[in-house]
Image 1 (tube, one colour):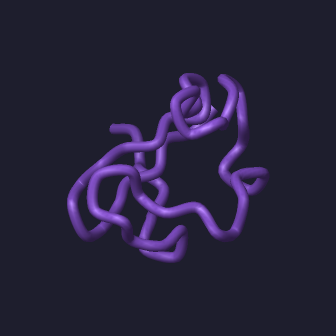
Image 2 (cartoon, one colour; image 1 turned 90 degrees about the vertical axis):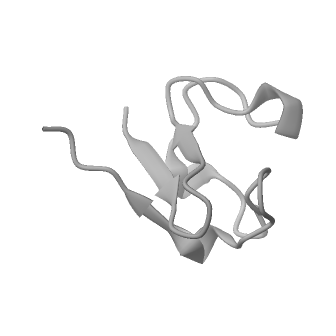
Length: 55
């Protein structure tokens, strides 16, 4: 499971957690998140997210 961060506001989408309030169940991979997804914090598009590197 990976984490993806919005480059605009810093919101983090965690694949393990999903976004139940947005209709995205736990364990949903980023590739399976709908293309019309928008950041729940700032409204940015899915294209404005980048995978986080774990250090």
